[in-house]
Amino acid sequence: MFKVSIISLLTIACLQLHAQQIYHKKAKLMGSRFDITVVEKDSVTAYKYIDTAITEIKRIEKIISSWDAHSETSKINTNAGIKPVKVSKELFDLIERSLAISKLTDGAFDISYASMDRIWKFDGSMTEMPSKESMKKSVENVGYKHIILNKKQQTVFLCNAGMKIGFGGIGKGYAADKTKKLLISKGVQAGIINASGDMNTWKKQPDVKDWTVAITNPMDKHKAFAILPITNGAVVTSGDYEKFVIFDNVRYSHIINPKTGYPASGIISATVFSLSAELADALATSIFVMGIDVGINRINQIPNVDCIIIDDNGNIHKSKNIHINENTK
Image (cartoon, rainbow, N blue to C red; front, side, top):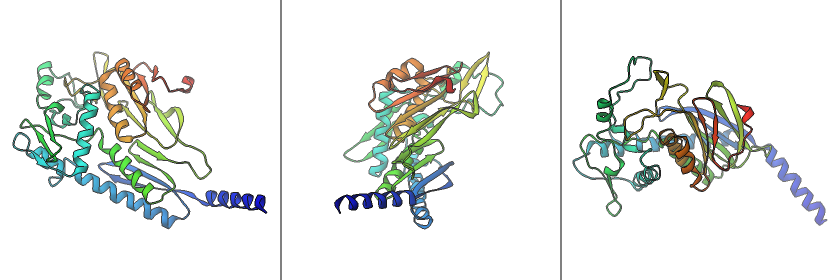
């Protein structure tokens, strides 16, 4: 009887597992395309959870948007050089983590990039490089060290008039992390939050297979150079294969060094794997600025983080724990 009961329970568990299906929905959120996927037993339950996720992302956008005049972020920017602004603990903590990443990357990541003058155009209209003087001037108000946090008062102060902060390099990853955590707390068994390429996954597909992520071949964006399994983790790719300019046979990325105003070069794609989409999001952009050698060295020092970099000659560079078949490119 005991053996039969165990077999019966296993059979029931398998039937319940395979009764689950994958449901997903696309939505335009935070100015980008989000694709939310959940594994559930029926469509009514699944889409209820997806709508919950969409509501959460909209809530986050209202806090971190620099375009919404009523957001906490806009209030910080409006009071730059004037006075500290008291903010919610959620935003305060996000800014505090952002500054920690700035220190980790020696300023390659900097939320005060929003202060930068937009002297570079990547729409085909540029005919010559900006002058060195204009590049230097464009970053005069950029500098994470001029963002002052008061933990006790829970305030944020931008020291210089004209300073601004923005979360374009970390916000979607943050939203993916928060939404994943919310859905797990609601009992969603498995899923993916894909925030326009900033992905965070949990558990497995209904057939017990890992989720997989295809990394775009930057030499041919319609193909993948690798397909990798991912479970309970995040992956983010930054690339310049759509936004770049070329002067004197040098390819300049749309990712600008916030310290110099000079575009990154030498890298066309950086993919970061981490437990957190927020961290992966920030690091993927930072690698472009830090460069291949410094970027990989820095990634190798961070626990549970790995990367794959493709340079502008199509060569693949990997952190120490990444193993892929390079012939797949």
